[in-house]
Image 1: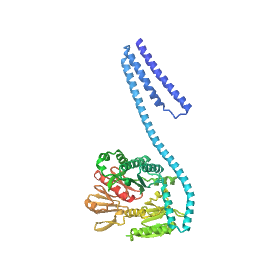
Image 2: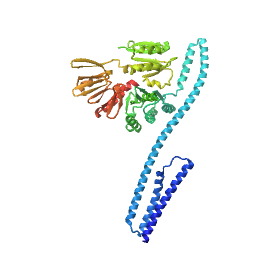
Image 3: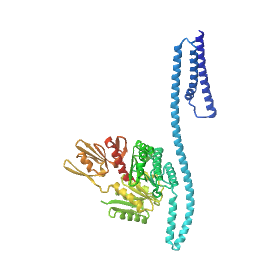
Image 4: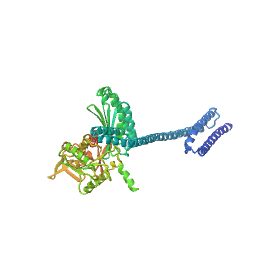
Length: 326
Length: 238
């Protein structure tokens, strides 16, 4: 009789402790929520977090008691322990899912943050070019005066040269590739990286602000393509050939991305495996095909060309319908 | 056959320079009309059309986009090339499905590649697919054919204006068709011009502005078909 009582006391005290601790935890959460105005806390999450250590302690104590062979119902103990283990596993599973969701959200937020940062940089750039524009406007007046002077003296050749020089200067200040400012910023970054290595990145672009593709698809595809070309151009010994041509153009709902660079034909042998196993290229191809596009690469003379066609990308028409309804 | 071209620029010097460049490109290929104001061209469009438009985008009171919008009300596919002084473009140029965008000053280097592509796109040779059915002789231009469908001995020819048929063997058909056609299945040969979407085992083609049709793509032809579609459409875009 004494043994059974002891067991009941142990179980009773154990359960009571769990309940009290849970109550304390919940109360604490509620109070904290009120005080610090933090975001809503997931009570299930906290309960499963707290119950795992508590139940394991409880199970340990139960096992210890059962070890003292003063137990009259060993079966009951086994059932109790299995129930606890099952419960803990459910808790862990729940935690696992919660963590999964959390990390997914974290990844999404990080991408969003990057997009916002690039937007911010774009606007800063815009501000900068705007102020440059003002100073150019100011200079323009002076330039016209210089030209007038030259023309009144009949120095047409000089005037022509002067004009050519000033046109060149205007074309040099070039930040614009597309109205899609995230991509615009991205291309500017890549261009400046290329230039810092003595490589010319020639971008011809004509694509709308909104395409039916995620930012990250364009970024991954373009990023990998440009990086591959940059690396190939870097390995070249002849500096005159260090030019990368990039074309991004939309017509008839289709988007063509084409990049080409001169490469060393000897690399076909020396880097044979790398070409086949290049993770970047594989990734690009997979992403393109997953998005209903076509990927092709070939060699023409000594240029390595990658061409990508993404179909049905322009969503301008849908936008118009929405505007029409409003 | 000449290509009817409309050039619209408010600066006569500029318009003349483009005309000269085009005549130098191919002396007898183009029939060029020049307009100095958008409204004149828009008025004329009501009962007239051109194969190719070369439009300035900046006019004193109007925009070249307005001309393009007027063009698109009747003619959805003809290529429009815009001339502009600004590298920054308005988002609207995409709504009118611009074929190309040339930065002024217009030079051979910029204009000729665009013309070459436009000529390819317009399929100027206008080669025809000729066949007989029930002892009647037919001639369809390849541009109009959306796809060929082989049904036992018969070949069904799908076009926007209707369905034709003839008797031909697949081998003969494949060797006969224009290079804008791609075989995607033992029984289907598709005009790349009409391809709208591609999935792993099918191709969606445009029948007209609203309707599409799904054509199966078999494993045997898939890789080659995809590559051909890319290379043909690339000729129009790049």
